[in-house]
Amino acid sequence: TKVYLTEGAFDTMATTQKGGIAVSINSVTGFKPEWVALFKNLSVCFLLDSDGAGQKGIQKLAPLFQAEKIPVSMKSLPVGCKDVNEWLIKWSGHVNGYPAFWDQQ
Image (cartoon, rainbow, N blue to C red; front, side, top):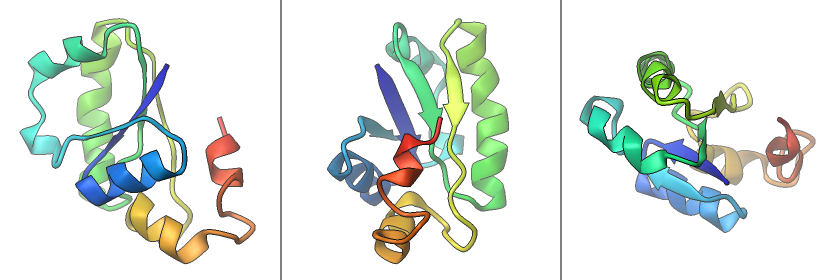
């Protein structure tokens, strides 16, 4: 089962609305390493904000999951979208919009 990690409640709700299973970590700095164990037997897909903090967060968190043999991946948002909620508002129905974005591996 794939679980998307997002940085906010609205991003989690938007991801869930489009059929994904999502968990909000609120912020990368607030994520506790001991929480990684809660994702055992899952696959984690980072869907963090596209800003520098979100991208640094992936670099910080991915090794924690990999050390526990939890598969990780990430989705990059289209240019001009700061987070998944904004993407859904701006791009839904466009070429890079749903469902094409979710079908990318």
